[in-house]
Length: 76
Image (tube, rainbow, N blue to C red; front, side):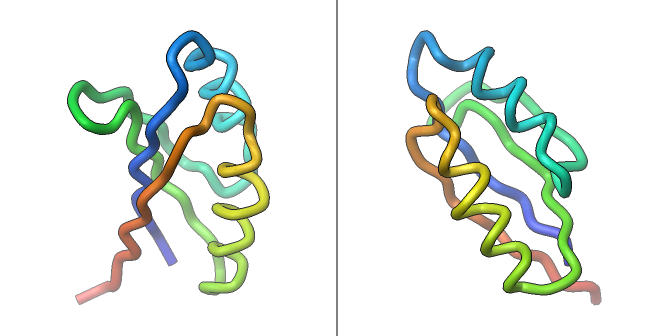
C-alpha cells in the first residue's frame, strides 16, 4: 500500500524534521514543495494499520511537523 503524505513543517525546524522523516522505515521518497505544503512524502506499508501507525506515531511525533494530510492510493 502506497500513500502520499502532504506535510506542513514549523518554520526554523524544517531541516531537522526532514532528516528525521527520511530515516523512518517506510518513507520511500521526500519532495520539497512550495505553496500550502512544505513537503510531499511517499510512504509504503503492508496494511492500512501499519500505515496509520507510521503516520500517527512516527511522522506526526516528530518535533517540527505541524500537520499532515494523507492521500492513500489504490492500484487500477
